[in-house]
Image (cartoon, rainbow, N blue to C red; front, side):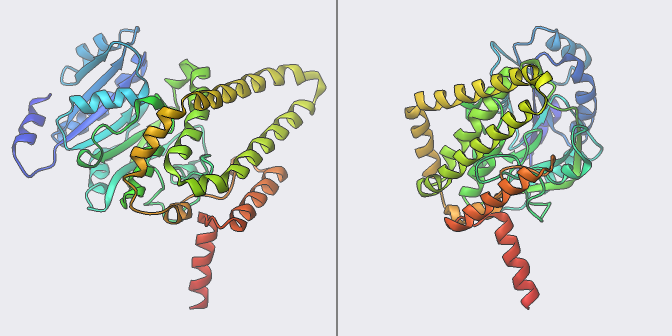
Length: 376
């Protein structure tokens, strides 16, 4: 722990801040990330903790030499983003915890603005604006939305300052509300979505600090193990729905989940068949992806007991029904990043289905609100 942070924690009545960065063989990323992070941490009297997930590229030695004020936690094995963050939180002294990706570079004012956004009593989680070269700039304020079946759908909520979930790329939360934030079972992907969902279930809000931003290089660590990343992404998406929704909502959404799977399968087969000359080359990665999806489904079927125990623990904290949750979720199953007639038709069917079974989505809720305003 840095001396500044020790002094801050002892002053009493003042907020203490701990920044946790998880690293796995990311030595080439750390100079850019830590240079700005350490500078802002020093200005805010915060400590910086690097959790290293058993890297073999000399990351630890490099940080010790270049950034001696950074406290290092070494895990004996790769515990993923979820387990790594938990290890950092256990080692932290702050009552405000900030999580930052090792492939993110903070912009000026990042930390101050992020922590300020967390201060209202009703806010449990705050996140930054994420600038990512992989996506159009409009997505920077459009992230943080999900569909009712768990797909990331950008630009759903009209209130940019209150997304449904805060992305773990740059996220702050109150230790008093969550303790260790993530279920280590998740390893990586959707752990931030579940954390935010838990906040909503207990009546708290998620805030976006629109003046706090980072430049995200784009899942560089995940690209080291793309198959592992695909498995966790697919498995954890379904796992989050099973843990967070009420049983009645899950029953209503099961046909939509199956429709989504069929729509994506039809689209993939169509794309493969478009050009017979390249069909075999196109088919291989698609077949591999579906094998990973099947592996995720089989994992869930084989771990019903563990899932049920986690579900009961989360549901015991519930203070609101799903009727207060689904208006923050999209009725679409495809986002608008790639616009096709097929996507448009599938989204229309999906939204109509939600209306038919009584699930109020963000689109329906916002349309109703606008109609009420017009009538006034």
